[in-house]
Length: 517
Image (cartoon, rainbow, N blue to C red):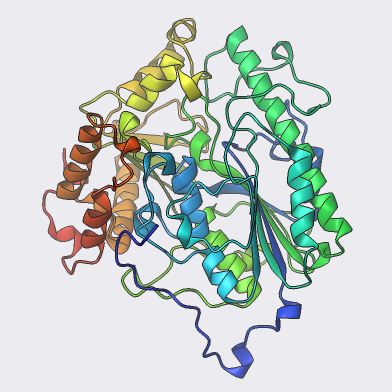
């Protein structure tokens, strides 16, 4: 695919001083990047009371576990585009699903292009799910499709071993597992050896409702997580057998939360909060637990610093990349770190279009929903239980729940302009404090911090005119079969890029949507 927008080519700086010169290729670490699909913090090393994940627990014991790690967007393609590029979705362009023809602005520099230019072998097992694929120079591919009905854990490990052992040159390999994406398969290829059953399980606490149906679905989600854990164990065994484990930086994440109500596609904690475990012998303290607010934007700078490769310099994007290298945290240092993390959803495709923005600090979280005049189609999709949404909470399950849970689901469907949660004392976001005058200063401080971020990163949807144009484009797309049109491209790519590269200050627009009463 050709570039959709004229993006300046970012290059790796080669004019380093002798003291700053990158290490020779033989000394550079390999990088094994493991990603699970639609997977939150449901792991035993994160305290889940039901599922047992011994292989990932051991990985955490050998490395650093981050208790508060977040994605920028809780849908596959935008999330993946962010951690591959180290950019927010509006900075790289990928604000929706690749299957719905959303895309980056063009050949945006990413981990694959930067590391390959620096001499790394590049490999990917599993799906890419980011457009355009031409932006990703991948030397080795296996299981490139995303057939969610097939979970060949042994095959993934064998293909990884084939790539790892093919050469002594340093490698960058991403293994993208299909588990635990829906459909939640109770058992496949004999895994898990012992299945979880609904009678022994309760739904995640942030779902709120409970029923035999939800318990069976939760059990099968856990079966997928258990199978994933076994597959990761197979993969790490192959790395160990290769003799390269001691010189390999291993990073494990989930790409966002699972497909229950109030998780995937939303900006609640269950959607954005993910597991992040980093093992790097000789560099990361074994058994260390960090509580800093980290994000998947930090993965690219971490890997580039480990490889001795400079950051790409794209002069038309904000001058400073948004992520921070994790090395000081891996080494056990006490450093000044970020105070806020940002979340976004647009609904990911026209049928679920509903933009929401979030910002959280150490304790509180603010959610903003500019289209509060329409019901939330994401909530409606989960209540409809169709397709991927079969684990959504049904209306009769909501009606059988407590008055508080009923109120929570009414708020999920009929969203107010502001939601404010004390996520320290209310981790499942049940009690909206936005209208409480006692928290007016907290709400204002978070809003001002979000507005500062919107200015610095030139967030297009902070501008009412751009938001209105994008909303009209998404609404109009419901009237055409754009997915079958081979020449279709979203106009927002030009609109966003023009806004981000203009000289007009973001806050010069007095009708900025977030200032509405």
